[in-house]
Amino acid sequence: MKTGRTIKKTVFETDRPWRLLLKLSVPSVLTTLIMLLYNMADVFFVGQLNDRMQVAAVSLCSPIFSLVSAVGMLFGNGGCIRCATLLGEQKREQIRAVSAFCFWGVIATGVLLSAGLHLLLPQVLSLLGASENTLAPARSYLSVMVSGIPLMLFCQSMSALLRADGEVRAPLYGNMIGSVSNIFLDPFFILVLGRGVRGAAEATVIANMLNAAWLVGLLYRKRGLFSVSPRDIRFTWDLTAAALLLGLPMMVNTLLTSFSGVINNRFLTQYGDLFLAANGVSSKLRMVVSLLIMGICMGIQPAISYYYGAKDRDRMRHILRVTLLSTTVIGIALSVVGGLFREPLMSLFLNDEEVIRYGSVMVLCSLVGGPFQGLLQLSISYLQGTGSVSAATGFSLFRQIVHILLLVGMNALFGFMGLAFSSSVTTILCAVAGVLLCSWQAKKRWDAANQHTGKQIAG
Image (cartoon, rainbow, N blue to C red; front, top):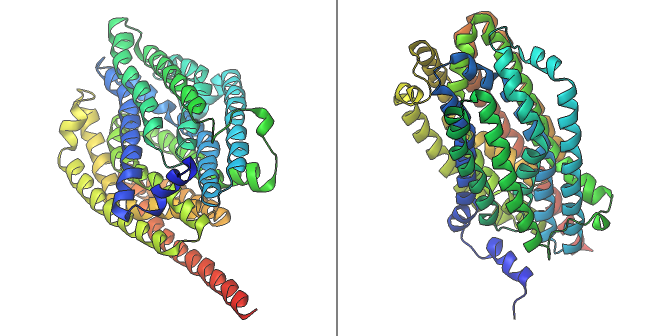
C-alpha cells in the first residue's frame, strides 16, 4: 500500500513534462491572475470617481506594497524551495521545522513592519514624493493599508509555502476568496459609502482577513507534513538559515523593485501629477505579461527544487525546455494584444483623455520587452530552485541596479520617453545575462557531480 509520501512524490516523478507544467503552473497562473484582478480592483473603482489625484495617490503608495511583498517572498518562497528540496530528499521532520519557523517569523515581522511604518508615516509619504495634491488621499489610503500589513504578509508567504508538496490548488482557493471579496467590497466602500481611496484600503484589509482564515484552516489540514508549533523550530544552518537564504534573492529583487518604483514616481512627478496618474493605470496593464509569466515559472519552482534534490538531470532539462517554450509564446501573444488594445483597456479604468494618451505610450514602450520575460523569470526560478543563493542574489542585485541606472540615465537623456522604455531595455539585457549565468551554473554543478561519481567508481 502506498504511503501519503509516495503519492506526493509521483507528482514529480511520473508525470510527463507538459502535464507536470500544466498541473503546477495553471493553479499558480490562476493565483497570479486573481492577484492581478486584486491589484487592479482598487485602481479601477477609484478611477470611477474620475479624480486623477486619487488614482495618483494609489500609484504613489505601490512601492510600499513591493516592500511587503519582498518580506513575504523571504519567508514564503524561501520556505517553499527548502521544503520542496527536503521532500525530494525524504526528510519530512526537517520540513516541519522549516514551516514552523516561517509561520512565526512572518507573523512577528508583519507586526514590527506595520508598527514601524505607522510611526514613520509622514516621512514615508515625503520619501514617496507626495505633492500637495496627492498628500491627503495618499495618507488616507496608506494609513489603513499599513494596519493590514501583518495579514497581507501572512497570506502571501503561507500561500507560497503550502505549494512545496506539489498541491497548488488548495492555496489558490484562499486567494480566490480574498480577491473575489475585494472585488465586491471595493465598489461598496468606494462608491456606495463614498469613502474613496480609504474605502479601497478597508476593502483590501477585510479581504485579506478572509484569505488568512482559509490558509489557517489549510495549515491545520496539512499538519501531517507542515507544522505551526514553535516547539518544532530548529535554528540550524541547513534549515532555518537555508530557508531565509533561498528567499533572499527574490527579497532583494523585490526590495530594489520598490526602490526603483520610488525613483520612477519621483521622476514622473517632475513632469506633473498627471503622469503619475497615467503610470498608476498603465502599470496595471503592464503587469499582465510579467505576472502571468512569473506565475508559470513560480509554479514549476517546486519541481526544479525536487529534481535538484533527487539529482534527476534529465527531468530537470525537460521541464525547463517546455516552460521556456510556453512562456516565450505567451509573452509574444500578450505583448501584441496589449499593444493593439492599450487605449480601450486604459479607458476602462479612467475616462481622462490626457491620462490615456500618456499611459498608452507607457504601456507600448514597456511591452517591447514582453517576449523576453520568459527567459528572465525562468533564469530566476532556476537559480533559486537549485539553491544557487549567491548567484541568485547577485543576479537580483545586478538586475535592479541596471534598472535604476537606466532610469536615471534614460530620463536625463530622453526625458519621459526614456523612462517609458527603461523597463524593456532592462528586461532584454537581464534576460541575456540570466541565460549566460544559468548555463555557467548548470555546467559547473553537473561537472562537479560527474567528477564526484567518477571518484566513487574508481574507488
